[in-house]
Length: 296
Ligand SMILES: C[C@](O)(CO)[C@H](O)COP(=O)(O)OP(=O)(O)OC[C@H]1O[C@@H](n2ccc(N)nc2=O)[C@H](O)[C@@H]1O
Ligand SMILES: Nc1ncnc2c1ncn2[C@@H]1O[C@H](COP(=O)(O)OP(=O)(O)OP(=O)(O)O)[C@@H](O)[C@H]1O
Image (cartoon, rainbow, N blue to C red):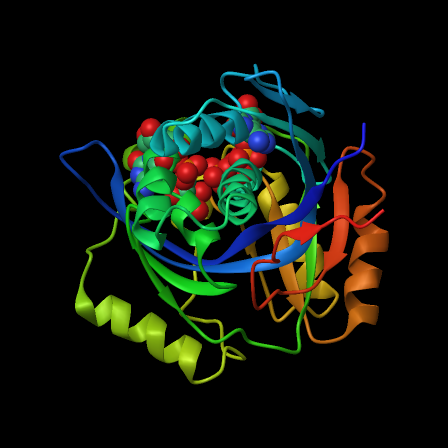
């Protein structure tokens, strides 16, 4: 099939992720720094005449549960027109690994549809659809680096720190986000949502993140004893010269930031000994890529 449009759908790492109180709506407040990375899926699309949304791709969920499908449904519903789109996804990112791959696909589909139809929905309307589909989705409608607060709905752009290579290691272990949050509550690692804590993180970031000592991931502390890979992978990354190594989101993917690509390559070589691990060396991205029209 010939597709007419394509958009890249990059995933994210959480440079910092501090989980606070559980809210009345059941979600937790967060203070997090999200960074887009060049590990990305590719979403192809073309308008059809079958009054449906179809998706071709390698997914572990049903069509109706696919966040791309849900995004399409809400978009067409808001426009008040019949659905008419075929999607094909080249999936390069590991699913369910704390990299927000599904959330990114969801936002990419919204961006793509809004471009195809000449921007009928405002930024606010896209944002509302995004938040209704997942806490991480609004971030993927914005810039490459952001301070993310609330349950994910308060997104403040930050400058992207340059000069690091990102080693991403997915150990092929699925940790459900809801389960990770409940383990975190059991472990008692919830911190106060204070302006002092926030100021500290903002200062660390804006003054140059060569000093990562204030950055952490609350899930890492909660999951540490049950999942030994966290310590194993982290140790190897730090031994090979990573400036920082941490869990992304609620896991199970780990990442390391390296000043020198050769160091990240050495860490990769050592970690490759474990055949279960999917390993990538990628770069931080400053912006979400735009939709492209495919020229034949
Ligand atoms: C932990 C992170 O990966 C950090 O990037 C995200 O906040 C998770 O975001 P997400 O995957 O988009 O999560 P959602 O699909 O909105 O929620 C899945 C489940 O995670 C829990 N959840 C999620 C986000 C949040 N701020 N508080 C929560 O308690 C809730 O139990 C929720 O039912
Ligand atoms: N387009 C999609 N791509 C991948 N997974 C999807 C998609 N739509 C729905 N899902 C479902 O969402 C689950 C989680 O996938 P995802 O890659 O977003 O996890 P994650 O990186 O842990 O997300 P987060 O960090 O947002 O919690 C998958 O196992 C899959 O069943």
